[in-house]
Image 1 (spheres, rainbow, N blue to C red):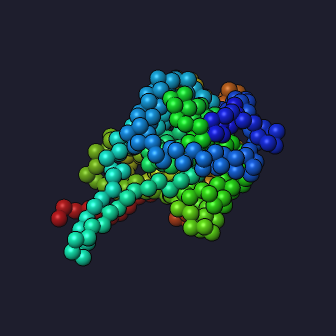
Image 2 (image 1 turned 60 degrees about the vertical axis):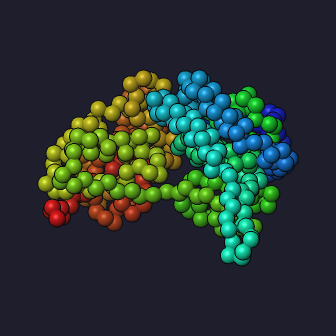
Image 3 (image 1 turned 90 degrees about the vertical axis):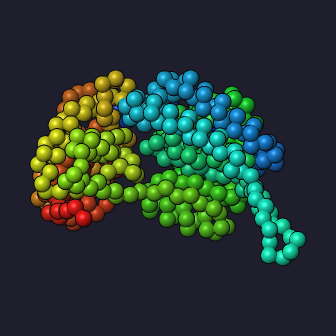
Amino acid sequence: MRMLIGGNWMESESGEWMEIRNPATGEIVDSVPKGTKRDVQKAIRAAEEAFTTWRNVSPEDRAHLLYRTARRVEENLESLATILTMEQGKPKRESRAELRRFALTLKYYAGCVPYLRGDAYTLNSEGHLGFTVKQPLGVCGAIVPWNFPISLMGNKIAPALLAGNTVVVKPASTTPLCAIRVVEIFHQEGIPPGVLNIVTGPGSVVGEELLKNTAVRKVGFTGETETGKYVMQTASEDLKRLTLELGGSDPMIVCEDADLKKAVTGASVGRFYNCGQACLAIKRLYLMESIADDFIAQLVEKVRRLKVGNGLLPDTRIGPLHTEKQRKEVEDMVNDAVSRGARVLIGGKRPEGEELSRGFFYLPTLLENVPHDATIVQEECFGPALPIFLSLIHISEP
């Protein structure tokens, strides 16, 4: 696949390409250009030129474009989901869900046309009126992560396009394929050249230029917290507007009056969806002591039934971690907890079998007796491992 700049398919000025591999098999899925600083500058110039006319397109027409693209994405759901699963690793059912969410996001923002209107109000001075006029910013940069590369791209480009901005998308280096195909659909549905561009390449080059180029007036970034700090610092040089979505260490607390069946399902889905690779995933589980034994027994049994495998297989519920580095980080966290006295209730290792040995698979893991100074408690675990804690607090009726 190639980059799309100013409505034209392009290779990089570097002449170099990056291989995209399936994390379930290690096989090459496709290749994309390794973009350079000059490639990004070319895309920014195209977006600047397109902005002069796109900003004057009526919000209703921009909304119709979003609706049409959403419909085409839904019509091509199966082929897009296959691409997404092959490059990211998630089960195909989750890829379908992500694409449906992307389409819903486009429709949601298309429905926000009435909110683009300005306001008029009376000032304190007699006979004077004040006006608020809403104007688009200009060129926006969208730096998209690898864990939800389509839905999180939608969160960035849909409001930007509806408001009359133009966009340069920088997809994650390991998951650009489905994003390129979706951008192509936008163009097939009539988005003017230069309004939506996509440049592939390393974050240190492509992302860096989006942050430093003064023609880019806003950047939306999703990624690690430490990287987010750097993004904020770099963008501050020209007071660039930012939207940051960073990491988290979210707890789930289950009290005595909970519906245990629903809570167990919530804990399983909340931790192991997308192989635990989500900033909003449950990272720690706290149980009231009176319900702990029953809850843990049900959760262990539910986790035992989660089929680990290639995301293209229909019965797979947990795919591979996205990279070897991701798996190594999860393994190190689990091993650290065990070395400090934690007990593995289920999982805690790589799955067996020749078919799974080629991918970055790790069994869904539950831990108990985890000390609070363990790495898995102190830092965000971006993978399928969940520490469980018991609480002696009793919640009484008021």
